[in-house]
Image (cartoon, rainbow, N blue to C red; front, side, top):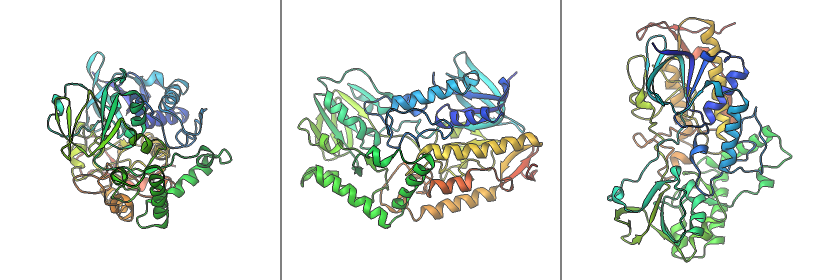
Length: 492
């Protein structure tokens, strides 16, 4: 006999903890069987639990990179990874979430059974099942490391690890190779170079790098959270292809490069050939100085591995003892997608075969009583992830209240999902994410569509998606087949 709850939330990172907190505060979670918060790791925190590499930090002001209903107490304008993780742990402790938390419990399957979701779980005591009236996927996007597909990597004879699974053993006296030049690499490389005997960076494409933000101007104490959020939203203008703001940002980045790297081979190697913002623009004052150290080498992309020899795309060979893969994540094909099967037995992965789609970045046609946080177009390229998470939580709260007021499950209409997908594509077509001439983790590699980022301001995401709209949904009677649905009317 299956354990049964009203709501199961998969993932206890920023999204899962934020939603669970709102549920408790709004009185929608009172009894033990109202909520199961499932977490495959042994503690909460998501990426901020997993990422412990040297230099890990957030480039969003702490007062924005936190829940609006839990301001927190921060040591500075920009928090380090450990401090953010501590904030999330305290959220679980202080908001009464621990009784509902099931750690060490991984989702291995989820099937719609006509009136509930049947979850298959792998936990500390083996396999179990859990029936849930509604299911929230809050597993995040940065969960499945992406490893480079190069010959010989599996045969590397030294220490090798992804930046999300940092090997804390010392690097002193060792030769270290770092593959990748994204956000993690820009943060960790200066620290690795300080410790290692020598370091080689193998980069496919150089990042746009901006000066590290001044805490007094980026997060002034004179502004409250709403004012700080509005100021951050102004940065979206620079994500519009061909805009004056984008050109100004490009000049700032080029000025930073030219001020720190003299003309020559290295500056050429550090100059991107795509528009700024097409990939995430990074902040650092020590990236370029590190690349100029005598014990640091910059090489093209990794092309192969022979024992402990890294072969770069230009044929140069580099002997290393340790290999750090700062190569990002499989963002467009979420690892949970093949596990979740909806009303027709179709998996999310199959539904998303041409790229992730949704309505309101939260609900998917064919999957009753299912809500996806941090999913299709559910992040921001210029602002805090907490803005999206809190808006999505409002939609989920409204849907759960509606579910308790009537019979049958809730499913978003196919037309609503199509209309939202068309809107996203229209908005995306004017941005640097689609027009900037780069390959990024924001774009689905199968269709070329922008499937990760919301291509507008955070305020517009809240306006469109931060509430439950009954007209976008139908009621699905128990054990129904497709077509046996009725329109939802707003509850009184």
